[in-house]
Amino acid sequence: MPGETVGLHIFEQRYQVLFNDLEAMHLDEFGIPFFHDSKIWRVGAKMRLVTVQKRHSGGKRDVAVTATGLFRLKNMDETPGVVPYPLGEVEDIQEWSNWPLGKACADARDALIQDMRAHDMYVGNLENQGLVRLIQHLGVDAMQRAEILSQPTVQEMQQALLERIEMTRRLIQQSPQDGSSFFVN
Image (cartoon, rainbow, N blue to C red; front, side, top):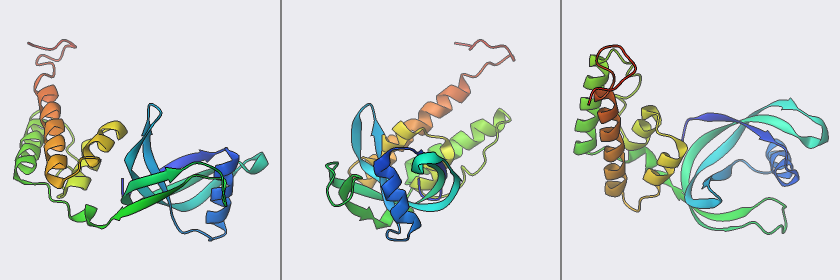
């Protein structure tokens, strides 16, 4: 998600070439489409190299990269050509930072915050406005993030996020009432 920094261990030769190009400043950014269960999703994050944390033998390295934006993947070619790493045609999602949360999601978020506070839970940055930032701070896992962000419209993204918020609220409301490890039905 935009703004997040992650560590990567670069060991495949084709990605060593990509990171050589990034370090030599032949490239500014690269993309990481969401990948799960051998399926490449049509949404991903634009990334920038922040630092090489450690170099290993044979060109392997540990790096930190940060997400700078989002994209939709139009097509991808993994066939080695001019470069050995996969290339794709992407559509930059410029408006991601302006995607509204919507009234239903905002109301559900406010109710979630109230439930969390009632259970002495840390609410952190859940009060941040905007769809993408709430997804980030809600602790939605990568698969759920991809499912939400892959929706074709902002309204459908809002609906998918609303379902996640409501599920989180139900889980909090079902938390043990008496300090034990059993849930009250």
